[in-house]
Length: 269
Image: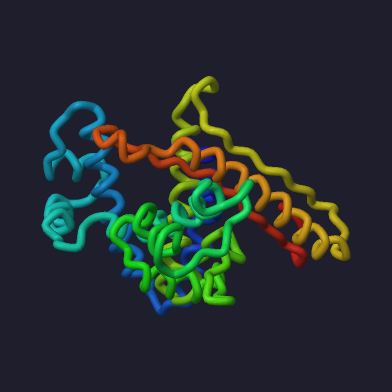
């Protein structure tokens, strides 16, 4: 590998790793534990790469591709905790429910969510049963009250925040971080290996000469505009969800994310 390329890869890796390491340090996780995570990631991705080429992923072939010993590969593959873990099903169900409350004609009027009774016809319990899988109305109500999405008034439930941001516990924050960063990096990895015609959309706008006095105003402005765009996407997707009349068709997962970054204390790189 050329020195210039190796240096570019190092810079890229450090940009990715430093925020991750910052979070791990706050959680009391030392570098040896991260090394274990990295080795497991190499085994998982090495196995996927070999299978994608139509070959059999053996312990030896994974070891050759990743640089790990066969003993280490075997230990990781035999680990009962190997794999990606939680698939974020609960979060996706909550997001789907909120989208239905905002867009389904049975629970909204012209895109404005109606106040719902807790039980009965056209109620919150009915909404949960239709759009949140096997979650119960009581547990869903507790989650949405804790996250500030709904309030109770006049014996009805009012949706006051259409987006779901689970930040009640450390585990929820970590799950959100892992999911959203993973999706962005998966898009970047896909685009890195694809031709121009098949790349996924990946853009951003930035400016290194913004007055610090304007930052608060831009945070408010960008949040308002971004939320409006995401709600428009959500309405579009909700109208194209699979219904109960299509039981044999498998649904596809799609996501569009918007993030805000600010660094008022350092010069731009």
